[in-house]
Image (tube, rainbow, N blue to C red; front, side, top):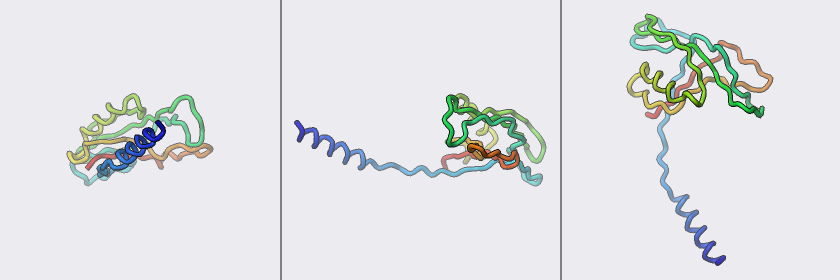
Amino acid sequence: MKNSLLVFLLVFSVSVFAQNTQKENIKYVKITQKICLKKTGYQLVLAAVISDSRCPEGVTCVWAGEASAVISVYKDSKSVEGKTIVFSHKNEEENKQWFAKYLPEKQRKIKSISVFPYPKQVVTVVKKDYYIKIEYLK
């Protein structure tokens, strides 16, 4: 019985490690608080971070928290839309769809959207340091 269990575990471990995992080619785009007036097409700008109640690193929290930000959309340097977006797990897919409308075709396979910097215990984040990072599959 012990030998058959040992053989099973050996075969299982070899088969698990033998899997060929394809490395994803992930790129990212940053949305900052700056606007380029000469840019054509859509441009996303982080207008403001309204709130950031995410659980700081190094702290145990009951609730993971969320961040809220106002995103301004410009097309050919003219304001098109301003939207308040809540970054949390429950509306992640909705946010991906909204951002995909304004990103170039090659950047629409969004993997994740995050607000940076992530809060740390006893460190206050300066509002101008915030940015949004959108990771997408190339």
